[in-house]
Every structure is written in C-alpha cells, then in structure tokens.
Amino acid sequence: MINLIPNKEKKEIAKSFYYRLVVLLLVMLGVSFFVAFIAILPSYFLSSTKSSIVDAKLEMQKNEPVLLPEEKTLAMIKDLNSKLSLIEKNENNTFTVSNKVINAIILKKMSSIKITDISYEDSFPSGSLQGKKISIQGTAPSREVLLLFRKALEDDSNFKSVNLPISNFVKGSNIQFYLSLMPRLGDAAGQPSQ
View 1: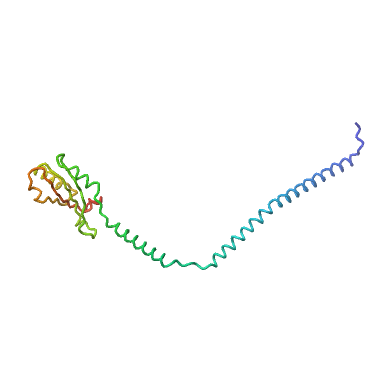
View 2: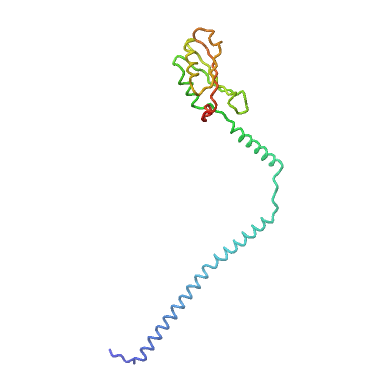
C-alpha cells in the first residue's frame, strides 16, 4: 500500500489527534468532578442543616433558666450526706473479732470441752479497745479441764486477760461455764499490737 499523505500533513493529523485526546480527557475529568459534586451536594446540605438545628437547640438550652431543686429533694440530699458522713466516721472506729482470735480460742480448746457460744461485747462506744470483751460459753467435763483451758487462753498472746468466774466451779462435773476475754490492743482488729 502506497502512502499518499505527505509528511507535513501526517504530523498535523497526529498533532490534532493528540489535541482531541487531551480535550476529551479534560472534558471527561470535568464531567466526573461535576457528577461527584452533584452527588455530594445533598449530604452537605443535610449535614449543614443538622448542624444549624443542633446549634439552635444548644443556644435555646443555654438561654433556658436552670431549675432549682425542690425543698424535698434538698432535704433528701442533706439527709443522705449526713448518713454517709456518719458511716465514714464510724468506719474508722470499727472493731471486728478477727479470724486470728477465733482460731486462737478454738485451737486452745480441749476435745472434751464443748463451746456453745462466742460473743463480742463493747461496753465503751468510744472506739477504744478498753471495753471490748469476747465471751465464751460452753460445757466442760471437769474443773481440771476447765482450768487447763483457762490457763491455755491466759498463755496466748492474743488476750490481755482471761476472766473465769468462781461460780463456774460450783458443780464438779458437766460444768456449764462462762468465760470472758479481753483482747490485746490491736490484735483483735487484725492490726499489729502496740
């Protein structure tokens, strides 16, 4: 096949082809941007409308007067605060018969002694351990066994004093006894002794 188009014209045709290609690409790019802009426009208007509504509501809430709580509510709050402060104050003055003290009593007990009751009394509400007393009630088979139990408790470092009333020795066997113990300062509450 013979090429009848001169070289000058060939160059002009190639040049015009590239110009048309560039124009077509620019037009396609412009149309794509326009379609994207049209697609995003409703979302933009929706979000700006929502933003203006939220701003208006916020402004209205700022301008509304703050409602004062009712007298009944204030009284309830005051009552609750006083109860909480009372609990917080008393929390510092707590005394609990610790596991250590109960275990010390049970470990010193002979197998023939039966303990029926271990109770705690506080005769001084000031929070000091001075009036705190642990009471034990039970039965012992003989006076000798009861005396050995009292001696074992006296030798224990958890107790400051052991009080076994003489009335417990009236009976010779199957003795119903009552024993009171004064815990050593700090030990009964699980704190280090002073």
